Amino acid sequence: MLKSEKIKFLAIDLGADLCGIASVDKFSAAPEGFRPTDVYSKCKSVVVFLKKMPPEVILAENPVPYSHTADLLYAALDQIGLKLCAELERLNIHTVPVPTDVPYLYYDADNKHGMGIISMRHAAYNAGLGILGRNTLLINKEFGNIVYIGAVLIETEVEPDPVVTDFSCPPNCKLCLDACPVKALDGKTVNQKLCREFSYIQHPRGWDIYTCNACRKVCPWRNGIR
Image (cartoon, rainbow, N blue to C red; front, side):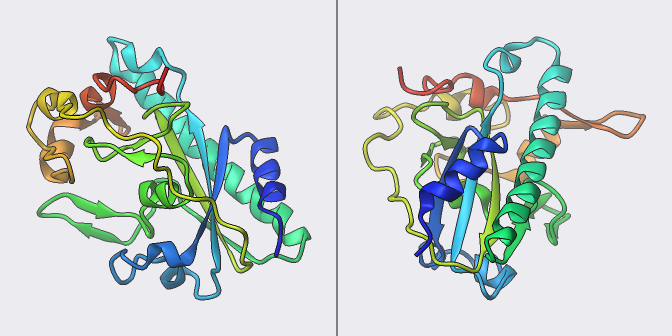
């Protein structure tokens, strides 16, 4: 079995802040059509990696820096995934990169509900990179919830990382739920229609602007557990 440390070293050397490995068995609860093996039938392991947003960006009063930084992080993670695929192919490991954000196929226009080809936050959870908070976001113990996620599917079985069990959201904390201006959060899921209609605007020149990040901002573990 290929050592997971080698893959993690490659991902971090290419620019990731953290990397973990998940076995495809961990995705058995995912909806049919959205499991790694539905995307790539040869998949045996999922390599998941993170990049953190600079901590002060989320506090900027103008929404443009947050939107711009998010777009840059998505692009950077896609580039890391592509380069990681090339490095692994040199080791005779076949790979398929997963889009960090778009494109994806499933979209319910009436409810403005989209689903990536696999759930990146669940992939990161399965790879031991954090927990899923009540705001539905991944929370990493070191970097908090302002992390963005990339992934690569590989045909080789690699030693997986255990899921995180040594921390959780603070007991009875509902700051993110209470802070949501449109009450799109219930502690388990997010109503994407409510969230998207309030949190995104399209500029007349065509670009998207994220106008709300309240659920990230109020989290006591936004920047990790100190």
